[in-house]
Length: 281
Image (tube, rainbow, N blue to C red; front, side):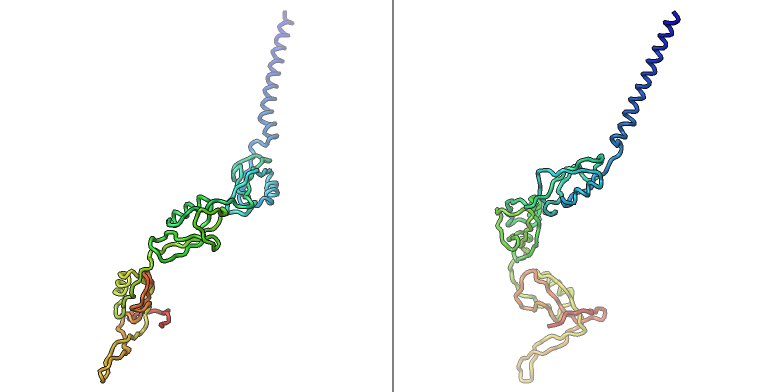
């Protein structure tokens, strides 16, 4: 009887030891062996590869224990040269394990050809939005007399004019001629002689012109009509009073366009001086 009880307790003891050993082995496998074999918890930040030339990628990633594969599909951006990295996955700064493969999309050698939109008559602001959405670039902008400020009058690429609807390379730079909002309206340049600065500005702005510069000289003469002893009229120079306009450009009576900039010369007041005056004609 005692022998049977002893055998039963031995069985229980061995079974308990077996269970303990199994628990230790399972714990060690999942918490010691696997982390060591798979570098669990050790990650690498994916570098930013956008814009890098494809032939530099292999060595760059190899030093960081990463691999790469170039996707069959390509894209295009004028920001990068041909065969530069355009897109990547995983993205830059993502956390990955060592030896992870990075999938790359390269910039195509030849930009795709797309239809140039018709932009004549649109505002330059709206045109830029449309160009950006299609992958075109803004080139130079110049102005030509016409009403409707900043509306497009014509567009060109590398000196060749386009109407819109033509097929051109994506990423092309589009140059524009825009309306200056003034048109070709002409008027006579007003006579500012003898006015002070504020009076002259009032006349300039009231005539639809732009005030550009006021230059002060110590003295300035103007031509006035005089009569000699024989009663004949002639022109003679007399000094202009201080603070008054004695010269202007464009000259009074000259045909000029709306929006023209006007310079004036005044006789210096004691409290006003100008060290850099344009040469008087």
